[in-house]
Image 1 (tube, rainbow, N blue to C red):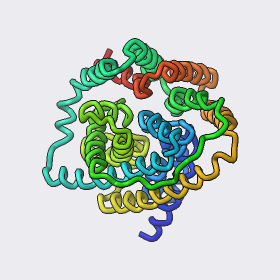
Image 2 (cartoon, rainbow, N blue to C red):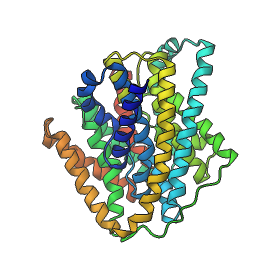
Image 3 (tube, one colour):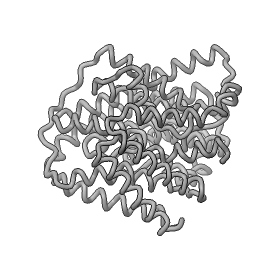
Image 4 (tube, rainbow, N blue to C red):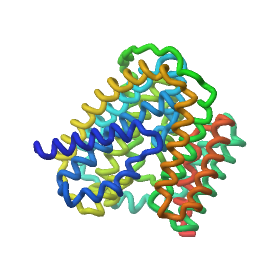
Length: 398
């Protein structure tokens, strides 16, 4: 256990670094980290992956809130957090997201323990659900348009993203980093463009948010959303949160951020537990566990997750405070320019061995769609059509 703890902390440290760097996603790192598997051993590598995954998603709320560079999971929450930051409540924003993530992990463990006692045959349930999945995904797209304040542009963004997804993921063979290229272009670069003319972030109030009972309700609903997502492929935590917010009428910005944090981390935990429940994973880490045939038990998983959650939440509160106290020493617009260059170089490096020009074109198209989305104030989650369209075609066997 002590040996596992060392590799768990090593994973937490690695995830802390990657979480603070825009454009980096755990699914990008996992294929690279597999080279350490023979040296770490099965159990130690599992601990490393858990630490990496949990800490990355906790710390990733810092660039999402303070710089406006979300990944696909925090896309919807990024704008509310960024808005709170503009109002001088940036610290409150990331701590609320951290609370949601923390509560989401706790609620997920309780939910799984309850489900495991009921002995429901989820594999049979998933087999029964499969034929209906494309129609469920179509319904999600329709709901997105109906509830949108800008239906024309929402429809166009969904269509543009969906066509790009069909071309990249359905009509042509995709590569390991195609998704990273698309998400960086769609969700990262356009928001950085918005920051180019800003000189500083503005004065920030470092105040710990007051806990409210309603936060627990939002975390429970978020956990339920994270659980449902394992049965519905191609939907991001961003979209699940968007649909849930309409269902439970979650208009309060603080509760919205809480539920997004809960969805993100509960989904990552359930994506691993899905291997037990339906025989398939819903994330890069679960696929790595399945492919490498890593054996683990519930006690090992939950203890590692809880330790990583506690350390990561503490790191989030400390690092975000330091970040806010020092960010105005630098030119905010210059930071955005540096990050645009960094993300672009990262895309070029990742794509170098896999059809460079092909990925450059995809990257530029993704940026264009993202810019249209931001400029027309369309919900960022609608760009998840890039995954939903090819998934619908796949299940329809067209």
